[in-house]
Image 1 (tube, rainbow, N blue to C red):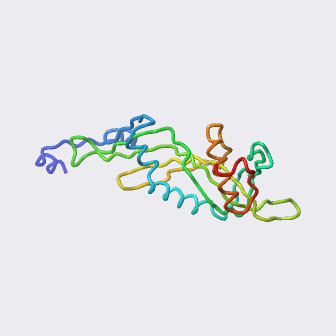
Image 2: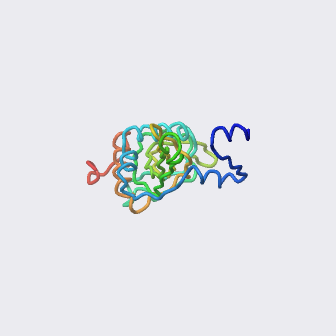
Image 3: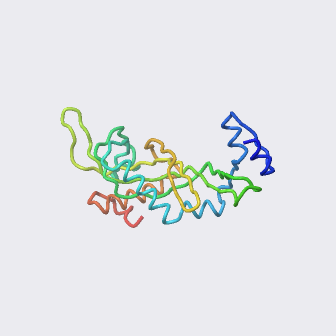
Length: 201
């Protein structure tokens, strides 16, 4: 190999530390929340479809935690259950994103241009139906449920992938308006009670 290196006119360095090796060919940079490249990818229809597919493949028919949607209460998400069996996902929407990062792999003086991957934690609102489980009685009828979930999403050149997913969680104060509007559509579209003052949200 030494002869081949001499002929090629290059130098060879042996690295035994993976992090050090990766640092030579990649770099990590923080992104502004309103970075046009990232914002465009997050709100694109292809992203919504990819996230919908992920939610369906990983949560449909599964047991999940979530809030019972009850418009008899002033706040419709008061009752939180840790185990709703047989989730049927009805709707999903992107609420927000955070922890924006850019990864560039490759070197400026190497062949081609560095490959740039964008990453963000995308918060998703999910509405569906599931069966309430009662001790001694098993599962009952379908009831409306809703929850939020945070997904770490990677946007590569021409690709979208979910690197990790958090557990279903309650809505934050910032998500309440969008969550209530989603819950209205969920209940109205599936035959559940919606008060008149909430219709049209």
